[in-house]
Length: 214
Image 1: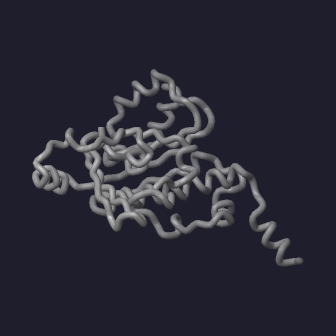
Image 2 (image 1 turned 90 degrees about the vertical axis):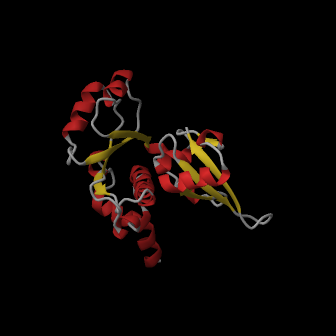
Image 3 (image 1 turned 180 degrees about the vertical axis):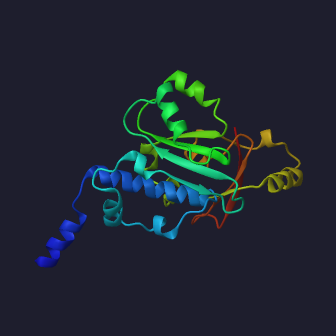
């Protein structure tokens, strides 16, 4: 009876903390899969450890981080979580003031929970680094972990050219993938990048296709 009570107390907590825990875990996996440095402790953080670190009602601004790419340390990304308030032009001034390494920052990822005004979106175009907007709800589940998902590999520029040369085609002749696609969003893909998709199943050992991001 005592052990059952301990287990129950261990898992008791707010729904809000569970939601932020799941989203931050997916974020860490996403950054790792994009090639950024992510600590093993962040990838394996448990819910009780998350609550101990961030509390039962996590403050969005406390969940952010900045890290560099494994193959290019000068390629840095900063992630900021925002609360429920709409993102306005005034809000962006606050966000810009929180950029840690402005000169070396290659990408800024904003995790939002509400809408962004047209004026704010236009203002983002003046930012020195690439700005990526991700909805918090889209991070609740890691789309790449679904049992039916095939394997995705992002081709390098050289691998892309080798593929096009081998098959004597242009990139625009490949099947397309929209940048708004869940997989393209997860990997932060840009227009023109090519994805190798390997399907495996009972009916075939391996089927490889390619898609070009538009």
